[in-house]
Length: 315
Image (cartoon, rainbow, N blue to C red; front, side, top):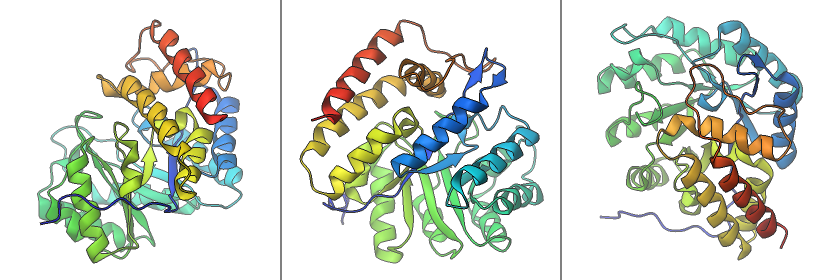
């Protein structure tokens, strides 16, 4: 039985970058820095993914979500982007399929591809219920991305059994799936399955601890890429060109991921703000109230990693 998919040298990688939402003083959204960051993502050749966990989707209200969608559509000029379709619910509340479909419609109405975001209600469904819910979503949209999320990111996260993923491959409107188990083996199993059953399907790795999953056939939708979209794009191009410099740049980017996605994992968002602030890309690294924080002592390590990345990328 095949357990590991083959490495695919020279493949073109589709990169979606989960854009950080920066704040001023931990309360006011820094729209100027955010828009500049979206433009930087686009200039690098990556596809922005907004209203994701990196964008504090569970901390912002509907009005803010709509404003982000509106601004993203303008910034992309009608080009592709993805956005979380998120239902804000609570434990022990039944899944609200109509509310989920409304969020999917909201993303579609602004020209984005919806990412069906995990929620308490969705996580509590049976395996068959999860598949049925996505079939119903498919009846109301042209294309969407499914999403498996480790509970390390959020308590309502859930990783499906492999046969549930197989059922997702049978939904034509499900054009891809983000897999954020932070484990290689479940993702390898999905790559093998999708290569056999539906080669055009995009498996977007969300494994910030194993970003070389692109070598095996995964694309990506990563929060880590928001730290340095230009360097991720350069890394991707070096892989496509079979340039040996890929390895060293990937190694340093992975070191950045290992450091910033350590537990508690959700504090990576503060790490991202610290890293972008060190580069002069955002005005303030303060996370919103209640969000997990990293210590100021991280800054010295982040600066050393940044210097190392700049050195490797310039060779």
